Structure formats: C-alpha cells, structure tokens
Length: 592
Image 1 (cartoon, rainbow, N blue to C red):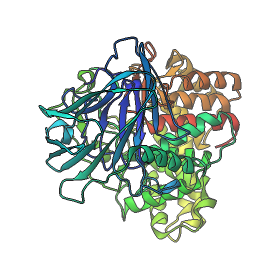
Image 2 (image 1 turned 30 degrees about the vertical axis):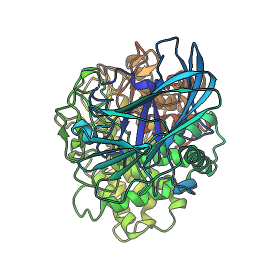
Image 3 (image 1 turned 45 degrees about the vertical axis):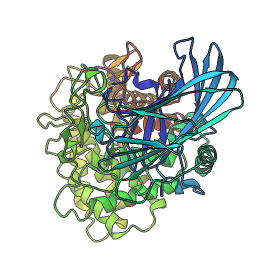
Image 4 (image 1 turned 30 degrees about the horizontal axis):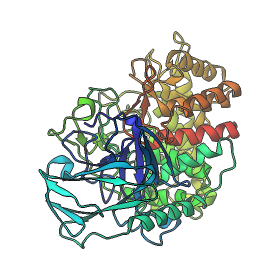
C-alpha cells in the first residue's frame, strides 16, 4: 500500500464514482464509472496497484501543504509550499457541462481534471501516471504522442491529455516541469470502456470551474438553520458525494477493505447500499432540508426489493438494486498496511438483521407527509418489513453484522417494536394487506419482553444480547424508537454504563474489546445525553468528536483513541449521518 494514513486522503466525487487523493498529490484510488467498479488506481491497497501522482519534486525540502474544498464543492485545492516557492493543484471529478443541482452525476463524463497554478517562486513539478486496471491485475500498454498518453488493457481505455511531454516506459508515463508565478498547466484523464464510445475530452480549467458551479447549485437547494450549520452542511455534501445519482442509492463508503485493525482480517467492501443506513441517511437528508433525496431513496428501496412474497427483505443491495453481492478475495493484493484479505462483494447480503425493518418504517412514518400517496411497490415494501418484524423472537446477526452464530440482540428486538409501532400508525396508507390489530398485539409483546428480559440486574444496564452481561453500544438506539425514554431510570443507567464502560478518550466502542472508537456510536451517545437533559455533556462530546474529522471534514468508520488515526472504510456515510443527527438533536432534543 501507499504508506499514507487513511485520514490523509481527500475525497473527489462526481456522484457516480469517487477518487481518493493524498495530501502529497497522489491519486491512489479511483473506480471509474461507479463506486463499486474495479479500480484503475489501487495503490491504497497495494504499492503495485496503480496511481497518478502530481506534486513538487522537492517534496522533502520543507514541504508544507494546505488544502480545502473550493466554495462548498468537492473540488479540492491544495497549496504546496516549499523553500523555493509555492504552487496550487486544483482537482476534481468533472461534472457534465451544464449539469446543475441533482443533475450532477446523472451523465458523468468520467474525467479527472487537475490544474497546476504557480503562485510564488519557481517550482519543479513531477507528474507520474501508472494505471493498473482490474484492481492491479492489468498493466496497460501506454502509447504517447500528440499531447496525450493512451492506456489500454482489458476492458479499460484511459486517455491522459498533458501539455507537458510525457515519457512512457515500463508501464508508466512521467515528466518533470517548472511552474512560474501565474503559469497554469492543466491535465485531464478520461475513462471509457474499451469497446464503447471514445473517452470524452474536457478542457480542465473550465471543467473544474463548471464542476464547482454544479456543486454550488446543489448546495443552494438545501437549507438548514439548526446548530452547527457549517458542519451539517458539509456532512450533507459528503453524503451527496456518496450518492450514486443515476439510481439515488447511497454507498456506505467509496472503499473496500480498509481495516478496522491494522494487519487484521476484518476488512470488508462497503461500496454498496444498506437499508439500515437508508433510514439514517434519509433522516440526515431530511434534517439538512434535502427533500428530493428522501423521496428518491424510498423509490430506490422499493424498486430494489421487487416482489418479496414471504421471503425477508434483503438488508443491502448493489447501487442499482443488485441482490447477489457474493464475496470473493483479491489474493494478489497485499492490503492496506498488510491487512488481508482484500474483499470484493459483501456476504452480509445473506444475513438476517431484524433491526432493518425498524429503521426503514420509522423513517417512513417521520416523512409520511412528504411521501404522499404510496405506490403499490412502496406499500408492499413497508408491509413486508412489518411482517418481517413479527418474527422478532428469532435470533439474527445484529446491526454489527456478526459472522458468527445468530443471537438475540436487544437492539434488533427494540427496532422490531419501532417497525410495528410505525406500521400501525401508517396502516391507513398501506393498503389492504395492512394488519394493524395483529401488529399492535405483537408490538406490545415485544416491549414487555425487551424491558423485562433485556435488563441485566448485575450489570445495571440493558445489555447487547438478552441474557449476556456484555455491554453493547447498539442499545443506545433504543430511545430513538420511542419505546423507552432516555430519562427512564433504566435507560438512563444504560447510557451512563456505556459512557463509563465503552468510552475511551471520548470515543465509544461497540463492545468491550472493540479495537477502536466507532464514530456513529459516539454521536449516538451525544444524542442520548441530549435527550436525557445532559446538554452540557452532550455539547462537549459533540464538539470533541467533530474535531476528530480530518482537515477536510471527513470521517472514516472508526478512530483509534490512542493515536487519533482513522480506521476502516472512508469516508463513511454512517459517520457523517451520525454528526447530522447529533447536531439536530442538540437543536431539538425532543425530536424522535
């Protein structure tokens, strides 16, 4: 892998695909076309899996970098300061010319644009282009001439246009060039399928300006006037960047197999859409005043599910509704920091997770007025999820997707209560298959069982699995369902137990031996404290957690409480959803 810390990467997105660029100027991850496509740059996961580097040659001579997104977009500007001068690199995945607002990503040109601008002094720059399609399996032929390099291998064609002559050798193209103050040098890299239409050509300078305008138009569609408005708007922007705009699905992250523990084996592919994240992301868009997204996400979920009959609704899908996401390993890749295996696909699609119906139905009830008259497909989805919740007595894999034996997770049963409570309230909208009388009876049975059997007298808290003494941060979701108040004495004791027993350096772990703090769980604790009336503690924890984002405001899945290092796939939608929810809870503590 590249040796770059996870938190050192910035996100570039065109709402269809994404790239990660290091602080030093190396694009070490790009899956063109869609988030879950095979990478053409994969140095993130193996030193030999491809990259495109653009930065000062004298990087070792007192290099200091400053970077920020341009005008509320996901176009990145990095200023490199060295002893002899300074230079800026502005880069992004280009928008389709003329695209505005939610048109961004509908017809992505699949072009990476990078523009070098001399600021002070005379700076020697180096461009090095080493594509390795199919997750590094292919080393393409490179053909240079006429201001471009053509790279072809297998199903991929890449065209790099450069005003600087590039030398092609050993599967790489490279050049060094000087940049003086005011001088502008632009590069663009276009992807196309090998046997489809040729790659698009865009002038990089106006392409980036057009892309900034497209992002600005999208941002102006959204209005949020609660606390921490800048943080909420930025997290909403990141969630937009994780949205596969052609379908409306939101990818959990843009990466695969970044490890929860360095050198460990818990490395999974997150480039898909989970229904669990669906509820939480829809709530985040709703909070951030993005009404168009909420409706599209429900439409996507209903279409993806299809006719389920008596079969359980799957917990996750591909970006265009694919059901089979069978997992396999890329054994030729060494993995980030030697963390193997590197996986593509995710076998969690086979799991039974009973928290999922609650998360979807709770959100449907929350935005019921915006949904209007429900389509037959959406009625079928919601009724199917309610029926799934009636099987609450069965064990499941839980929201942490345990790959061991199924267990009786308390949060899953509490969210089955939330599913049925919401379904009863929505029954007049759900058509002839709605069964509110039966759902109501099962709902009441669930509540009695959860409150009686979920409480562990010896621990003095609700624990993660019925009958287990082990704390689990998933129980923090219980007050969000409305089943139990955060001020209830037992729930209040549980919140304090999690704060004392699962929190290290202000970061909440999922369970006692979890190797790092889980960002969304920490934001859930903020919400619970706010709901319990502990506003001062909630604010302090929120601000401490928000400050742990990287310099571009991005969160990975986890954070090491000892070092502050980000761990797991990045940027993680659920982490940013957690920030939005916590900020809104601090604005309106009574909100459910």
